[in-house]
View 1 (cartoon, rainbow, N blue to C red):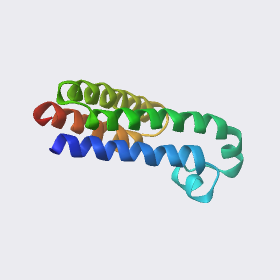
View 2: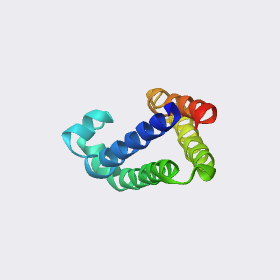
View 3: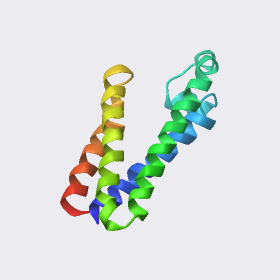
Length: 118
């Protein structure tokens, strides 16, 4: 049960990131969340929307793992949580260290929980 709850929370986090990157990137809330200037946000808006779409795919895969028969659920959760973990590590190394705490560590904890309890 803990594994499923963590998978669901991480899926919701990625829906939130999708909204931030696709729809709020150049709005005051998005500017603050990503420490952007209006000028930089204008130049990078399309790129951010693309990133948001990918975060939506991660969320969809995680939700899929929660709705699929048990025989496939763990494999799907492992794959999509692994993607989140790799993206979080890469983002933490290249963009902002806080991504490690927001994405990578929760994904790692969820992976552990899923494989102990799913």
